[in-house]
Image (cartoon, rainbow, N blue to C red; front, side, top):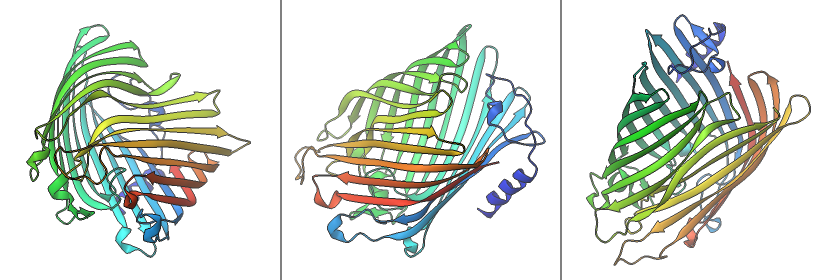
Length: 405
């Protein structure tokens, strides 16, 4: 962690204008690059958030005696690019420190390191990447304990230019998720129930309508293998269409709509067939109002052996408005629906249960410079479930500081 902070400080001290970079060759957006150290391009930033009060540290039900604590989260991040001949090497570092004053058990340090190699060409395009996560955090909306896990992902793709703006490609990935031996929640050992290896392969067709807009259509098949719980093994087959918008246009981000056929190996566990997808879109109106929407619909595994998975459907909408001078205001709200699937022939307390997690908040920001923003935020999160012990509400308030170099 100290080395990362030192690197960020050195980068800030040596700040220089980045050169103009070629578009469409896998390199960074010139507008996003802030630092150049010889051939190395960097975009470092520090985000200090949640400097305030957490009124329900453990996300427990109201009758379980929620406790509060003073907390802060520090997240230094850096993106790296280096041009090697006609190719690009890309990397990123994200280190998140969560600090609690009184409850030392909730203090965590989470790391995410990525490395990729992008090889563009006039006829072919080849990419490989590696992602390593070492974290002790809440893995999603269901598990409230901060538990340790390691996740390693390898993936690659190869595209062939069939027409001037159309590519045909293949993709492959392998993701290993391993929880710590002592990771537990509600009396369940998460290493035994959730540690798994996912292998995926796919075919896709990619067409570029404009330099900023593209469409991808593809199909994939993946296999989940649980080393310690083979009755959770499953196979998923799906097809999807994705629309992507590069920075510089009316929209930024993309959206995906698809169909997934999820089939567990165990005969006593029903499968799922239906619409899945995701959205991550940003739109700026008249240069002063920013709209952002994120959402997902996908199959997620549960820690509960009798309700081994749920279909997650969720969204979050955020609106930021520039006010007078350097002031701005941002509001957000969203809902996550966890629809559980039951194992046949077992005793289940609440059959076909559906939990809702709602979150909303407001923040007032002050821009102290081009890349420096101070904000005061208030956030509310609560979960509604037919299982009484799964209900909770959490109220947080505090300041946040975002600095880009």
